[in-house]
Length: 229
Image (cartoon, rainbow, N blue to C red; front, side, top):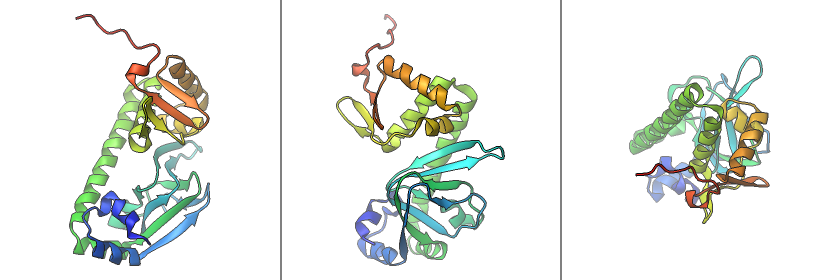
């Protein structure tokens, strides 16, 4: 394992090169083809995962088969840390949405690392707090926002996590499918299609192939009227 990747992972920002090299020696790298099941909810877990390449979907599935997507995670993201800390079963399903390469760290090795480098615990707490805030926003959105606002909020969240700045706006190069967006925002694929078409017609977004650009305000075709002073 090349430590240059580990150096870019926020969780290990406090480690110097010698510690990173020691960490690299106890990691494993595995490839998962698209649609591979990486984790199943309620199964026993003893590994932390870092995404080196690709993308994964973190989701829950109800008894009647409905799926709620909690997150789409890309390179540099971490998952599986809860079971590492409490030793309890996994809390969600994780599936590769494209060919993915993961770096795995076993629970025993991770706990030893925590004892040697306590600042990692602080980074982990920050990661968990960010996810809790994200969950709170999702619950609030499902309870209080209309469907257009929920879909818009989902796009803005994805843009903040995975987007890249361009002169036109924030570009999502590999946007979720309409069904994935529906499962993330608590609606249907047909509704997502209608809302995206309306947002594009109003000039707030631009869709092309598998990309979507959230346009800057100065590029809006039909900006909302501003109140007079």
